[in-house]
Length: 487
Image 1: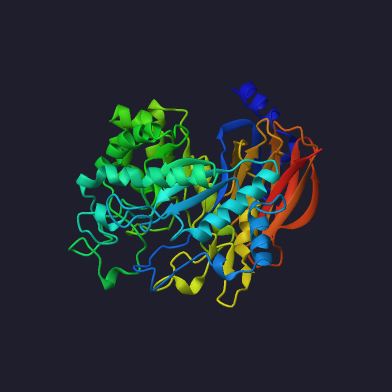
Image 2: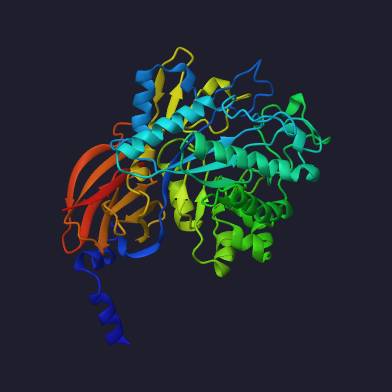
């Protein structure tokens, strides 16, 4: 037994063993040679119409692009898609209820989505010019009134007689994006938080009290399974073979399993096999009340028992207070929920337009009624992870022996992107770290840091060299630091 213990100790450098002697240095590891899963990237979400009940009297245009001049638009677009910006590799586009008024009626896909389309079209152009690819996921924000039993905007229940009309609603929008806009649509997501059956008045329709809710329709698990089987075949018949279908987006990963969505899909072989990726929002709020979802991989693990290759995306998560807590939530989605991509909620916002105040008002940019905009600190904290975790990379295993510190690791995985890792110190006090780095050819790491105090916002802080594969770093309190490998 003594021989075994001696061998185990010799596996670690002296500097790591010293931790047990002085109790002040935290042992940490980033294992680039142990990839947990492929990484599809970080994304951006532009929201145009979300709550308006009459576009003739109230144009919400929450993203605010319509107020900006060309110079400001280009500045924001380059900060989101450009090589010196977030380098976003994914975009989420909402499909709202305004594209068709009645059964068999004409479609108007620009009526309520012109600014979102401009944002994505120009962003895609920047991405292509940079030699990178973009993936688009579109989510049904709410169906037109006529497909619901209540026959009102935001009616709660699907009228099954109009099931094929709803399928055609997705399909016509998908064809428009691909064939007319030339956009790389990859996935259709069935619903936006359709799990929350309590978001309607008792008559299941719409009234003034509920006007602060955004568009929605209730999607029970059985309905999700039905559309997972129906929509892929209809997409193929329409010549859209490259577009996959997701199960929609529950409020949190706990609801994906607790509300029965994962088991319903798991139990239906056809739905399971036709599902392209798994999706759910990735919100996390401490506590055990109704609005307190948590990170869990239980539903994803269930699906991966039969389809181990399937990817899972978070198409919406909170910016929170736009600081270390925001990035810590990213860690939870990546390592606790085991996802392959993250897209935060509305990255550009007009704060005064959300009815009764936006509960998720954090973002990257604010646009104001006078045609100006502001870059918020959320942008710089998001940049810490979005630039590090580019599409095609791999999620690397990380270890930290401290509850207030987490590390997110992204391995190059044969891409042109450098190995990178992000150190998150949630504590108020500095933390001394001995970070063992394995499986990388990088000789040193270039570091950039953001502080909650905003004294540093994605500020370059220098190069860190490895000594016996270990990087020594003192992480300031309430800080996020990204290390990019270099040679």
